[in-house]
Image (cartoon, rainbow, N blue to C red; front, side, top):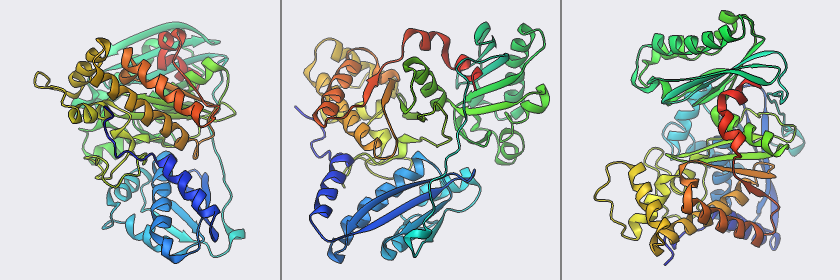
Length: 444
């Protein structure tokens, strides 16, 4: 009883492609993506020289470009090695192309159209350039960490790395269209922490849901009801403005990166990818020097399944992307295939609980679902490692809990072992769970 029999992991498809290219006449192909801060991240591979293999060449190059766009983020692709692929990519990632969703989303994030530049000579191809936030694990001084969640906001005040004050307040940022509500809520939390520090603060770190570029909020569901004009005027700089209000440096990071940072502190080493499987798939990445890279890490939209008939994501319209495999939607997709009854459920979260409860009771269908989710996870980790330097992956989110999570973890580890990968999947320790995001944000 194996659901989703058509599943073809991107990792295995790419592995087969590389083996075919090795046995054939081949040529180099390079892609690089430039970000707003001048950062550049590249991917280099060899593709078939034979024009008859053009479809395979374009398929893998387009899937790699898509992965780079959502993993790293950027506004300008550099392409070397095949002008035909360059032209097709430029057409697909345009306002009227097949990837119009991706094009328009990135235009909103980076406030400029996505560009493609063809590089004639390999020696002119841009080198990788990295910029990262370097948090301080032993955070000296008087620091405040703030965590903006969808249902509550948390704040922690620290003196020389020791938490001296913590506060959690329920709020409803997604249901309010007036940015004053969001501003007042943030100020209220930080003012409480400031009072606990006796009015002194040396730095403020912010963990927030959404896409953050240069300490600015570019896209975030927390502020989804705020009208566009007010969003640009008041929400984009909402955290940046804290520096002037409180007279200290402010550093803002995506909550996925902050969760990954907590995992890196737990293991004592970087090169860690954070994955949270809940409503969707969230990601974060810490580099080998324990730095936050500033990548988008929007793993919900990266391609993970090469099956042309894979389930389509209703938002982007693309097939085989992360949110359909590493979230409660992935569980529900497989459960529907196996005929599990959801007639009593009103929400996706309730459907997940039904399958989790069945797994706890030993239901074979539910167990096969979580084992398949483990296949997805193991192969996706191997695929992610083509784009990120990874030593550890932290496994988070409501899908990771209970017997279902154990089955996912066990099967994923089997796959990593099968392919002789040294990547370790870890679970958050009690300290990370107890201290939470706002404490880690204080280290920013």
